[in-house]
Amino acid sequence: MFWSKIWFFVVALVAAVALTIALVLPRPAQRTLMRAEANRLQTACGVIHILLADDARNRVDLAGAFARAPEIMNALDAASTAERLDEARMKQARDIGDTLMKAIQGNRKPDFAMLIDKRGRVVARVRLDDNDFGDVAAGRPLIDDALAGYLRDDLWAQNGTMYFVSAAPVVKQGGYVGAVVLGHQVTNQLAETLVKSLDVDMGFHLGADGVAGSKTIAFEHGPMQAALGKLGDDLASDCQVVRPMDVHAGADDYTTIVARLPGEAAAKQAYYSVLIKRPDAVGFLGTMKAVKENDLSFGNFPWLLVGGAFLVALGIGVGLMFLESDRPLRRLTADAVRLAKGETERMSEDAHGGKFGSIARSVNIHIDKLGREAKTAKKDLDQLLGPAPEGGLGTIDLLATTLPAVRPGGPAPAASPPPSAFRFHESQSIPVRTPAAR
Image 1 (cartoon, rainbow, N blue to C red):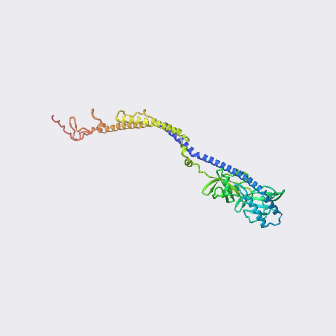
Image 2 (image 1 turned 180 degrees about the vertical axis):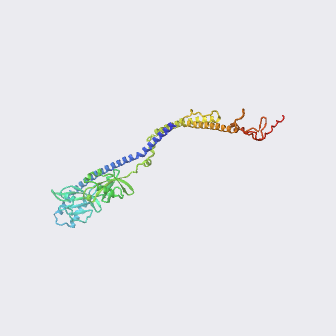
Image 3 (image 1 turned 30 degrees about the vertical axis):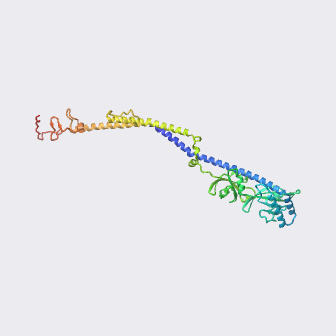
């Protein structure tokens, strides 16, 4: 049985190693998946940053084209020379701006416009607070730069939402006569457009409030705001510095990273998030649940190798059991049958090895013990009853057989014969009976 035990140990060891590998492998796979998801989020965040920069370039170009319209030049030049702005001038400038906005082509049309004279006064507002005019807008970085002759873009937080704004100076005959500001609202459509080809979702946030997103879900802003508080001054590196975090949004869990938005709205903690739905944990059970039918096909799974290894292991195990158990047991059984039939007085110990030899030795030891006990019993009876007469039955034979009812020479005496050590001098003798005539 030695080699059978060794083989069982080897098979059990291989099975334990295989089970350990099956239980441990999902964890490295989970870490690899998490790293891949983190790289995916960082890449998407960087792409969105580039797309926003490209969108800013387009918006600035649009503001420059808007500022070069002759109607805008004339309206702002006239307003700049006036000491007081009235409602009639406001409506006239507003109508000019509205007409130009309607003529803008493309998907990203501005949501509002502001016409500002060279003194920094708001001549007219178009489509947003369009009845307000005359207030001084100078002092805001975007407008000051535009009045100074610079093309600029910015992000404003206004009325609970955010606007990407761009400004351009209005130049007439070599002099600055004012500036125009165009604003594009941050909308769900913008978020969907930015992530359309990235297979991720995103959201725009202002502090603890969600402004827009590719999915209409309620975000958990606490972890994201905490991550923003740990960042440095370089906004351009946010996508690479921020570690992915798990957040709860709606009824699902997501993995997300955040990046800050520049401009005036940064003072109110404006940022955007890039998120993907968190995959299920890849444990052993998760791996088994994820197995598909084609994963077990002959083309994807080595069934021949597994089946061959199983048959080899089974064949070796059966062979060792036959050699070390079945065949020796049959020899022992045959030897026991011969002993029972009286064909042999003892079992052959040398013919049996291992535990079967121990069984044969135990049987022989018991046979020897019975023989010694029988000799001891015979000796004790001889001491008690005396030795048997010459040619008579032995003590053991007398005990082992039934005495005959009639002996040769006549019937047995009515009284039991006295012991051999008995003396008749103290008792009457019994008369001798004459045998009956034949």
